[in-house]
Image: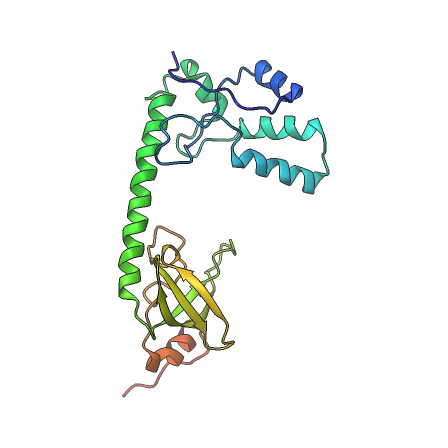
Length: 225
């Protein structure tokens, strides 16, 4: 009925095995971690491991209880691609009215979407890396700050050298620190959390001070001619 199925590896934990049997969790439906993986991942996903880590730190839960809670939380969370929970996917016959395709078709669809997304990212990264030249000024985004406000940018950085494997050697003008920047972090796409300032990733050295001041809002409007 389900095609190829895989059991979740429980590392011989009796409590986890009993929970899997009690809730009839037979497979671990999630997005394949590799482009050539055409089947479900037969192990606990990284999200489950992250739940374990957060429960240990935030609530101080230890032992078998943290395994049971994290397992139930993960299998009750909505699936990003389908909007259904993992238990709903496992019990798909009860949700045929709202699920046009089965879980196996969803996995294949996720593989195709992920492959096309990786190809688009690689193409845009290659194009951006070819456009950047030595001496260009760029502003690196603080991507790790997840806030609702406008993103902040560090810079400016000067491109010192173009390294193999689509990498750049950047030097900060203010501190002189050197960092290596990969082209996959650089493409400026509105649908992605880009790492460079939109429409300002390439700045002329002569106009750099004016651009920085205008972006930070510290320079009043320039007088007219």
